[in-house]
Amino acid sequence: MKTTPLQQSFGVEIADVDLRDLTADHLYPEIRQAFEEHSALLFRGQSLDDDSHTKLAELFGPLENRDAMAAGRDVEFEVPAVTNVLEDDTVSDAHSLHTLNLQGNMLWHTDSTFLPVPALSNILTAKVVPSSGGQTELASTRAAWAAMPEDMKAPLKDAIIWHRLSHSRSKISSELAAQSEMTQWPDRPWRAIWPNPVTGDESLFIASHAFAIEGMGLQEGQEIIEAAIEFCTRPEFVYSHSWSVGDVLIWDERCTLHRGTPWPYEEPRTLKSICCSVTERDGLASVKIV
Image 1: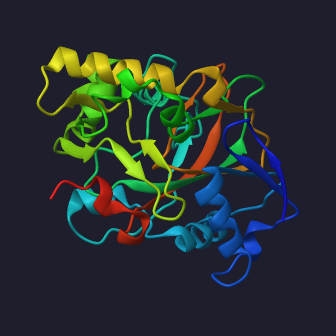
Image 2: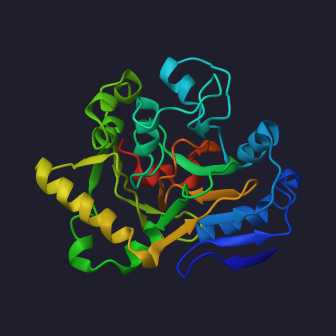
């Protein structure tokens, strides 16, 4: 496969691959190895519909179905849309709870750290892009952890970090944070350091959902979390992607923070996103609190 670095510390663009052609035995093993090594993969000019998007995601692992998790029973999976377009095809108001929730994605975060099973990957593709803005930015917590000063690492090496969805949403709006879909998940603890089971590289497992470090005062823990996220999102660890329709970004949730950026909210923007859940082979035992 022809690859080009996305950024000096992580990520590659892979050319001349049609993601619809992947099978467990054809191309996927090479792409999975690139995923483990580089943390983020970009494919341009793809033509994924919901079915081919789903088939691609199933190669990486179990589909994350939050509706089924919340209901505690089987619920048919639907490919989630990250969009400001409503069911009646109008665009959501810039001050609505729907738009505020989209703005919650503009905080540096890792998907699903508040769920019973964290995410391994996000496979995101662009369907409708605005005239400006709306980039997706990725930050490598693997590269940042390797470069982090020892005095900053010290309180995190053996830390257990607690995550709560409503915590991140409270930074946007107290009304948004109080919505049932934000409060339905119990607080979730994970170990702060996630070693990659393939490469052995360590990364910091952190998110805007992180609100406390076990054994520390709330303010002290939050200061350490915020300083760590600030360090991890320095320019030397960040790749910013400007979308074209058909682009596909795949990133490793175990070692990557991400966020969206604003766009003219009167313009439609639609991305389709499938997260895959971590399994034991992905190193779940390394971060799980038994």
